[in-house]
Length: 212
Image (cartoon, rainbow, N blue to C red; front, side, top):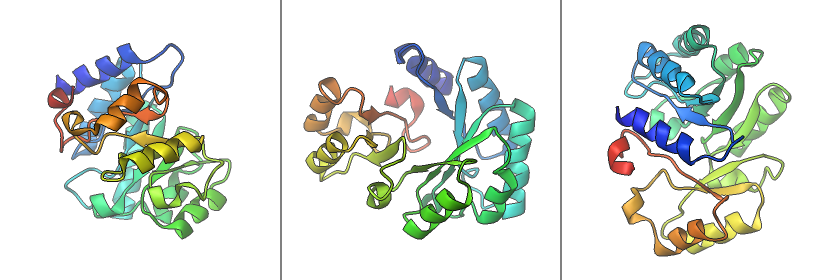
């Protein structure tokens, strides 16, 4: 119910024509499928998926996992690789297996490795769109359509300046509870930065209902 509330809140808030991407991760493949089908039913355009949390599947198991989600939902997927958080990387074996599926539309790469980001950009050019989820390599890819960067605390002013000066850099506020956002960031969101801030809930660290 909380997840549905968040998805509906975002859908109602979004402007007509904006692409809606839902985070539908779960500890199991069955859970991901259920969450993804629900997001599809609610009118979302795609989903963002990391490895199932609290588990460390092998590369072969990850391939079967993502393929099962695709087969059961026929929903476009943006992969999310964050090995420092998830404890496992979406390796070349996984990407090679999924790259030619048109429903795998991109990857948010948060490893912080410039070499890996370059490898993804060149190896899967025209097949998987690369999105940088790591602040320190964001400016090395000015051609990217989106670069999500967290609030930058305690360097909030610097992060706002970076996002404002660079067309491809956006501030992501899913790493903090909304009530702890810096006043300067709240002012930025309410004025000139309305189209430069990305919001999420960082579930399960911040429960959906509490985030709203």
